Amino acid sequence: MTTTNSQRGITDQRLTANARRLRPLLCDYAAASDIMRKMPDEVLDGLTEAGFFRLLKPRHFGGYDVNQRTVLEVILTLGQANASAAWLVGIAAGGSALARRGSERLQAEIFSNRDARIAGSLNPGTARRVDGGLCVRGNWPYSSGAPHADWAAICAAVPDEASDIVPYVCFAPVAEVQVHDTWHMAGMRGTASQTFVADELFIPEHRTIALDALGDGQHAGSTSDELPLAPLFNLYFVATLLGIGQAAAELVIEAAPRKAMTSTCFARQSDSVGVQIQVAEAKLKLRSAGLLVFDVADELDAGTLVAGEAGYPRRARVRAQCAFAARQTMEAVQTLLDVCGAGGFAEASRMQQYWRDASVAARHAALNVHVGYEIYGKSLLGVAERISPLV
Image 1 (cartoon, rainbow, N blue to C red):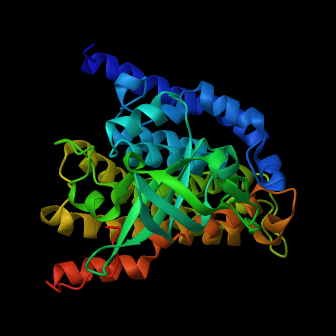
Image 2: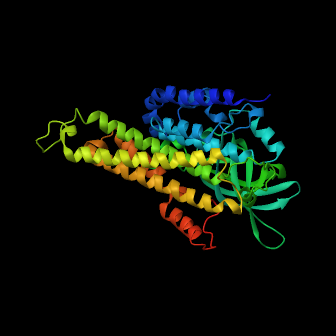
Image 3: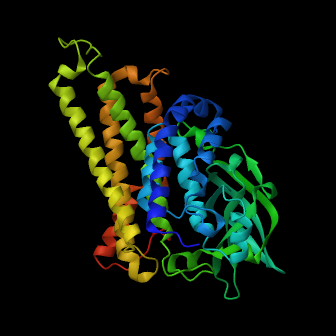
């Protein structure tokens, strides 16, 4: 069955409307997800019913192969209400984009459940070749959504005949690995980014993808319209962060006309020129960050960001662009926190959770601004050295 642009547009609109509709539910359970250190069942059920775990799954498996602008809008909207929930939706979408690079048999196994959730980590484990596949062992921390996942995507390094080390992404049902409770963090607690552990786990050959092949588009599931993976993940990470920033700005702006400004003559924060300037500065930084990330989404949708060596300069710029947007967002959150004052750190205040969540999300390795600058700077100056495989 052919999907027309009109039908696709209806799906895009429905998904973004569902994200707005879920905001009250996600807000209600934001504190619970923080305390429980995982997503409450009510939130997972709501996200599933809204179709968010079908994002980027192939259409012929019942998935929603929508525009990147739509995915960005969904994650950003969810992030305004519950950062951990938004992060898990982004991780699941990225996991689906990764799995569809695999063999047809792998895709059939994973996508037979169109709401299947994938969690994982590229922390390298070790593996040896055995008849029919790989025997894998290792620890894979920071696997966001591990307790809720159906499949684990884990990385393993395999020595080849030339004594080189070849990394593979391996897929295994979560029931075949252990989940260790290691995610005890100040923020983004609801992501339950636990550690997968395996010892002598057999991975059939059809459930492996060479990591190097993902960058050059030469893997089993390669198609002419395939999007590069690293910019997708970078976009989804910063989308959650930007949602937090926008929620923080909304909180401050809503409270300023009612909140007194202690130790001044101002009866309301909104009367202070200093507060007016701070709020304006924060909003402009958030707007700048938004323009940068939507620019990345539009480039992905236009097909100007591609895998392989020819696409590296643009991808290098996008790596820095997303990191710079994250930096702008964090600066805005810090300014808004200053406006809130000490009261923003009260346990009853959402601001302290925004601050904790943003502080952790912004420290994801993919959003390290100085690494992003170096990658982009080397590309601009023609320096051949590559310091990250994830570009």
